[in-house]
Image (cartoon, rainbow, N blue to C red; front, side, top):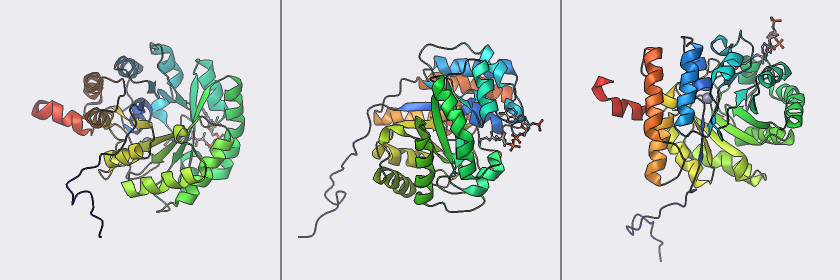
Length: 316
Ligand code: COA
Ligand code: ZN
């Protein structure tokens, strides 16, 4: 007998999804580093405080990188001094080297993120180091962070494609992920820097990682919505059991070293879909909208998030 496809039987099989996920907010860092205008410290601190009040459990505040590379975030020390930490909320910062770690420690940062890529050319343009060289640069950074009992995230950019090299293989991703895990980072965020992934690519990469012994719990997914596939990719990630998703309030962002990278997946769009699916986050969508609305007033333009556009309508 020929087996029927579920849709032919009119039997819809709903996938089993995680009951709860962590939304890791990157708007203040990944978002604002790509805005031409540098917002005042006051506006950025208020934005971060509003996101924490909305219930976001992790908010990437800024980066301690070369001020020549990212002038918009050069004053991250001062920003850390201005925010009002909410108990239980994590406030990580991006750190490229020991100098960055020292700067972060000087203002009491308790979680850092180091960052590399799955492709050589992007990495050289972004942090002036090849993949292996970047891993060697992080070795003392992660060791020192561990001494300080600081949590470390490892970002892998260009997991699904590189603006300079094109396709990136799941094997290349697997290699760099294992190099980061060997440094004993606590979490790995897989980044679709230029927003090219489709759900099929998500299955391929995650399958290659699971097959090589990577556990579900260490993975986070970071999508940009350049081609409109970010939410579909999140859904594929949920089907694979991944429980941490990066997003940017309002859909702010991109990456200055990735031509054509448009906004990150908007936090509001992600929350709307998760709520509909019954996946808990602990975040209040309306309060994120309010934070984005206030930020947009200072930015002078509306960021690209779809949910925002829908609720603001023509008077936005
Ligand atoms: N904080 C502040 N300044 C830093 C720094 C840090 N963490 N690391 C390096 N610098 C300064 C150095 O002091 C030096 O300054 P000088 O020219 O006044 O002497 C200059 O930057 C170059 O330092 P060097 O160690 O030679 O680094 P590099 O030129 O090879 O650049 C990085 C490497 C990683 C510092 C730089 O490429 C960078 O900051 N990239 C970040 C990019 C980014 O944030 N991308 C966003 C993620 S998508
Ligand atoms: Zn990004």
